[in-house]
Image (cartoon, rainbow, N blue to C red; front, side, top):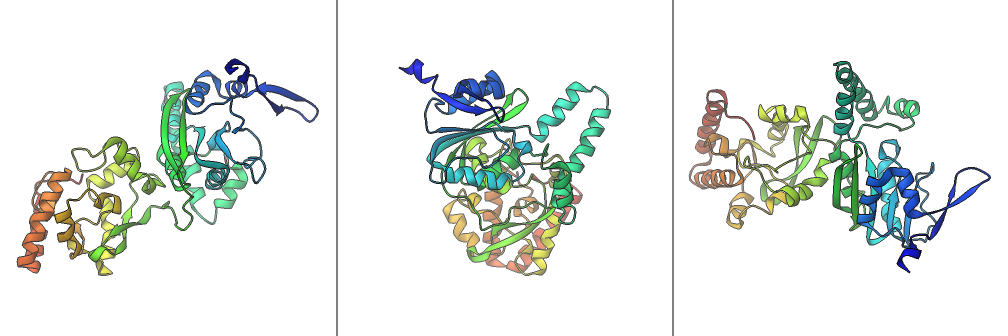
Length: 368
């Protein structure tokens, strides 16, 4: 009986006058090849009637309104999907809780790598830069965004691994598996775990605000220059669960960072907009780091209590004390700082600000 299920046919419309019957397995194989088929088959049973394939000019061709599926496979490359967030949200509504969604995309990194392999001259590298500028800047500028999508019809979009993963998490999915080595494409498998997040504005521009814990646990928007790909804020939990923390106290193997972002961070450039928070009275020059709710969970309980009553600062204590930026080094420096604050708040801040400047300028201490 199991072999017979393989040949349960589906109707594939290939012209206005002809319908061809194929098994789902054959259809997937013809669309994305053997390696793609192997990935999809490992994530779900294509023989199930409740598994649906999408390969249509209509991005939202997901069946009748009341239909629900245990698995959905998109055979349309996501570089050519115009409204990605709406697409993901629509898939979410059509899946049962725990249902699996599989798709694929060619990421920025793969696109650049392919160009370098096929073109040994620097022409390919220069073309990649111009292509990146064309496909990344216009979609972010309100005045020219409509013109860009009119000209491109939303095709051949440049999307990073972090952005596509962040969009999926924001749309109510949990990442199950990612494979970025299948015929030059990244394949993903995600599981419906909840409803899409619709009441926020994902970060996209160069200057943005991060929600961070301020004094007395109040959430404040901390200004920074972008060092990560768009939608990266939705991936912190996934990155920490998958890779943990590195020796520098930051998430290890963090694919969310951009190339220029690493330079910004190393020389503290990304921190400069925090002066806006200082002028607003939400932060001060020296103090504990403003952290996310996810990072806060990893802070020891006794240190959480000490932190609650203090304003966060631009220059963290580990810099002033010249400590290792590892998670343990940061916690140790913060505890030393907070205990000194109890004795003499003003003098402690002045003294540590001077030490921090010496360590950064003279000793060339760099950010993690």
